[in-house]
Amino acid sequence: MNAAVNPTTAPVAATPSAWLQIPAHWPAQVDLLTWCQHMTPGAAALLVIGGIVYIGFGVYLYKALVTLNAALVGAYVGALIGQKTGATVPGAMLGGFTAAAITWPLMKWAVAVMGGLFGALLGASIWRACGLPGDLSWAGGGMGLIFFGLISFILFRGSVMMFTSLQGSVMLIFGILGLAYKYPDVAQKLTDNFLGKPFILPACIFVPTIIGLIYQQTQFGQAQPGGGGKK
Image (cartoon, rainbow, N blue to C red; front, top):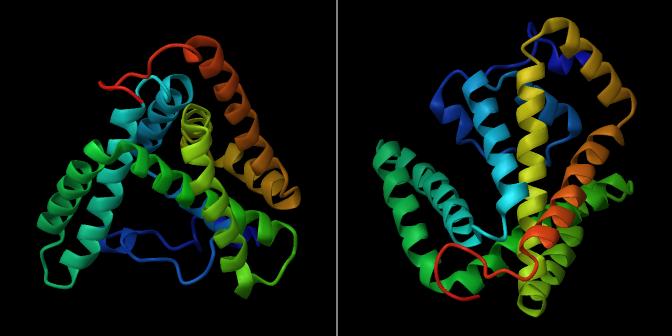
């Protein structure tokens, strides 16, 4: 399994189009480690900075951050569509702008969609972690999507804190891993530990998520969220 994250054997996404390909299977931990290994230092640094912002100020800047999420997803979808006609960049720009323009006035719905997506990813991950059939991961993802999508309407502020803390934690941990993998000696030790003890990576993501929840509740629990406008 270590060969999958060995620099001499793991494929490198050398072209922009390679980043636009949708995975043929649910990414395993080894796939995530391989992605971290081939991450550029600039991208890793941006993930670390962005992760800190999401963890520490998610509920305060939620409108701007949710709009940014929508713009990135829209740009990705637009790039996928534009790639078919040889207009990847224009497609990405149009998709990002359209998604952001739709998201801002429909913020509560956008938060529910974001929560549903996070819930689907979390549900599918838990399904796989429990050793259930991989071809039925969509069932776990569907349950997570419905639960977290609905709870976004019931506990709006709490949901924003939870989703932004989770996203920030994922960004922060993978950014740190992307930087750490630039040092060969450290990279080999990380790979051996993560692949030998699969629970370490989820634990590394869980801890900053809880810290972010506590910090945001303490600092902004009663304050009006930023980004302009009311909840």
